[in-house]
Image (cartoon, rainbow, N blue to C red; front, side, top):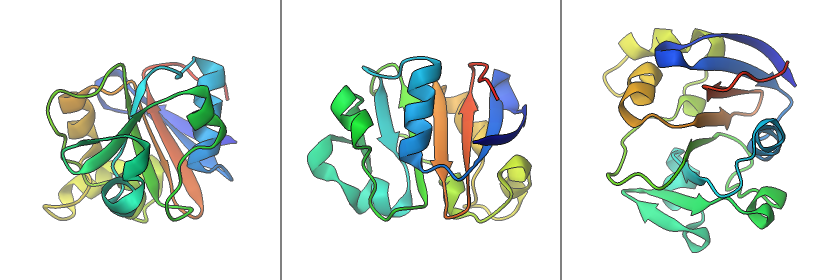
Amino acid sequence: MIIGSKEAGFGYRLYKTAGMTCADIAEYLNKESSIIGLFALCTSVDSGIHGFPELGSRIGKYTGLIITSDILADWPTYSGAYDEWYVFKCPPSDPIQVAALCNWGCDFLEYEQLSDCLPQSCKMDQYLENYLPLHVFGCNEEDGYIFSHKIIEI
């Protein structure tokens, strides 16, 4: 369920979730505005780099795939938690380089605090501006998040 939201950079809105896996979030996004036929890129350290290469293609070091109804029904999960997905209309033409927000163990509604933390920390506003995904969503063992241009019903 969505438990909070706030404005994020570059016209995005951040939604914080509780009790939802990435599979749950993908299903939720599909009900809000169909994501079938879009391209999803997993940017997590374990899942995106080492996870499920058999499911899709590589964009730089990350695994990507076209979202189908079969993928949506059985959303890929590598470790069960700590996953992050960027959703685009089509595969990015150039590799992207991000530090997945799900790996930083912060309150997702306070994500901006990470950008000054360490040089390699998550700089989500910069990623949103540079890559212009339709959605970014992720989760860890406790909470999840969605960055979206779409207004999502709470």
